[in-house]
Structure formats: C-alpha cells, structure tokens
Image (cartoon, rainbow, N blue to C red):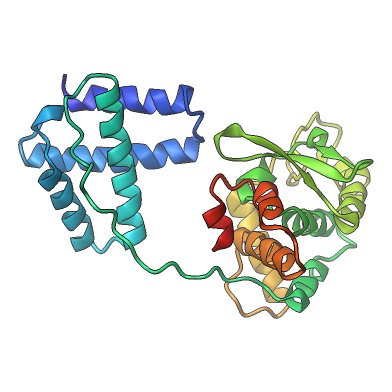
Length: 277
C-alpha cells in the first residue's frame, strides 16, 4: 500500500485513539509529509522498501537545513511512531527506526521570573479600565495555576469555581485536571466576571472566560501581546511569554518545598522528567 494514505490512517489513529490535540496533529502531519517528500526523492514508495539508512539520511538532511537537535528529535519521534503503527497494523514487516539514535543536545534550563518581577508584572495592568481588569485576572490565573496559554484561552466561565477556589484546565489530548487558584486569582477573576466581563460582553451569550471587546475569546497571540505589553510597562527586560509564567509558577513552588509529583499534577505533565527540568 502506498505511503500517502498510510500517513492519513496513522493521523486518524492519533486523533481518535490517542486523542492528540489539533496542534500536535498538525506538527505530526508536517513532519511526516516532509519525510514522505524525502522518501519520494529516493524512489521509495512502499513501507518495506525503507531501511534505517533512509531514516538516517533524512535526519542528516534536516541537520543540513539548520534544524536544531530538538526539532530533529521531534521529526524522528513522528517517523518512529508512524513505522511502529505500520508494523502493528501489519502494513509492514519491519520497523526501520529501531536502531536509529535520537539526536540529543543539552537541554537548557527554562527562563523564569523572580518573585519581585512577578509582583511588578501582575501590578502592571490599569485596574480602572475594563481591559485592565481582564488582564490582571488573566495574569493572576496564568501565574497562580501554571496554565498553558491554550488552556487559558480555552477556559469558560463555568470552568471556574470561585467558592472552592479552583478551576478545570483542559490540557494536551483534552485531558482535564483540577487546579487550585489561590486567593488573589479568585479575587481578581470574581471582579472581572462581575464587572468588566459583564460590560464587555454587552448582553451577548459568551462562554469564554477571557474575552475581547467583540465578546470573543482571546487568541494565544492576543495573550502573548498583552503579557509583553505588561512586561514592558513593568520594566522587565527578559523576553516574556505565557510559558515563562508557567516556568515561574513551577520554580517558585519547588523553591518553597512543594512535592515534585504535586507540581507535575498541577502542570499536567505526562512525564515527570519534564517537571524536573
């Protein structure tokens, strides 16, 4: 069977059986289409035509394009998963990536904010404006809960339990977890829900917790811009992103003696080694 439809079958398997997110599926699709292009140039069109040397040549080609070791490793993970799927479903009799080594590089420690920098960032939004109320509540939730930006943008008003001081976050693969919010986050989210959000939604039925003037959910790009603007206003020189607040959340918890497994659970990490980094 040709490789192109087999890739489609593999992506359908990841979507339905593994429940991978749209972003992850798109990354797999890009990497595997790239791999198929490499195989086509080499005249390889059937699964059992492919050997370890063909996979390794693809990695060499990626290196020649200037891709980082991490990007090469991601490509190989997609290719390896694809070939394992073909073997398991009996579309192939061999698995060519078994002895291909994963490209490795030293992992850099994540950049995070100091407590003083966090305080300045949280205080940056203008509380007198509707957008300022929203931005303060959003920053408090990002930092207090350690959310991914996609999780933040996907929050609905129903996901937040102000009485119990927690929220439901939907992580990778649509996995749900309950995360404590902390008193400051609860206070500012309550103010936003009862004040700025009510005015901003203008009577429209809106599910998203954090919205813009048109009543639609904030995008990831919009959140990034808001955080960058607040960082500049706070005089923070570091390159700030939503993920930096997630790193800061984890680091500050661990510095204060929190259990690594508890932090892993709150972050929604599948592998504790990610939390350790």
